Length: 348
Image (cartoon, rainbow, N blue to C red):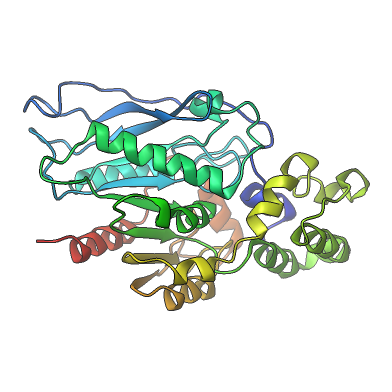
């Protein structure tokens, strides 16, 4: 069994109008800079176009100010209505971003995970959650970097902020990293190495059940790639979630980016992290990104899937079941790879 059109639509369609509030555990047990008990999680805001962007700051449980040489990770979410925890109302409840943040905090590293502009806690940042581009999401990363540095200043220099881009978030981070002031590193997890239209086409072709729709889908992809829109109302019902009129503007924009060209221009150390059980992004994509980046570390993680969970079986049904598992931890090798990378790039 291969991933269905429904799964592909979940991964690549944008917001589809969903806007829900993401619950946050706000524990503000003291001031970080006074030496009192350190908060575990707190709500953090950044400046959005017409309203605030909202996210969660997760801090390690320690007393006193954060050492100046400790970086802060900024988790950049993947496609569609993906909230700050990595969940989606389309049936994804694996919470990979929340679990990653908690695991990093246990290792002494703070992180910020965010709601995308127009959705969830950041609903008020723009009027239309579908009126977005890769560049506008990048603008938000700059705003988040400023907010992090204001909240966690480094006394003897600029706080290092390292984006962790997951899936589509990897493309956003790749496109934005050159604009981020004093960038010190970049982590790409399950990020595509080819233009989006090529990846979607490959996934559609991988499922024999999609054969009746392939010609129509490939024609739509080619049209969007040219920068033109398609009439989704005349398409097969199975294809409409992927090519809905409300998401075509974003798809046209996203398809205009070549991740390899972006990677070749990155001037900071990069970790390319890829699970070998990922049903959406291939090891080949990871290798392409790593080969194109001047200073890259490639980490291929055995039995890790797209939502960072351990999958021992080759059965896609078992793999997809982890997407809705609220209790399963993320694979520890993900955290190990991130921490090892930071230890290698940060000054002693």
